Length: 279
Image (tube, rainbow, N blue to C red; front, side, top):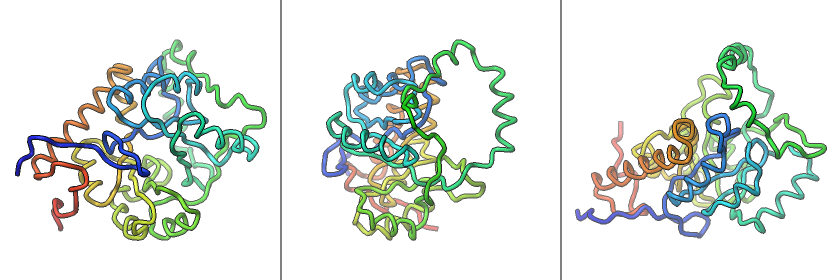
């Protein structure tokens, strides 16, 4: 097989993008680096990766992030008052967002009894200078609600069928970083069932647990159109700001290209389940 030229281009919502790897929405990037979401967005631009902007829990104001080039998706929570959402959603297209992601997998206030003591202990060692950059400008809106009360999440085919009734362009298979409920299955184990349930009526992405290009390849082989990266991006941001995020994305891209070559694949549309070992 001639694999001297490999393309990572893919189609998302009918538009062509340079690679099937997106930066997932996550909160408070200034906890990792002083440049916060701006650094992440700049690195996304350099690597031609889609950046997802968290409209609620970002440290950097939207106007600064939008000054960076490159494709961006907008993330919203349904916990905001309808009056606020009615302001945000119509403006999304005008601001250049081709898509809006909605969190829908946190139906109740989290039980934090075992988390809070650990967080409080770790907080003793946080650099005070870092905490000065921890403003969340998008919460400075009168009447905004920050408590999260959502419907059930998209890990099961039943929920996928329910979501399809509302006409989404994409369903994201995710267990919210594995931090909402103990013993929840990995998202990739649920991916194929959701893909089969959706049956082409929407695109399917997968989020949580993607740590390498090999992980991305397996997810694409199971039917995902794209994967979202969260923790790895924040690790790179913490290590070296914009350069660290770019390095993480470059590693993922190079691993994916290498693994595709080893499997005799020259383009994303040729990836299929035949490359997977079946137990």
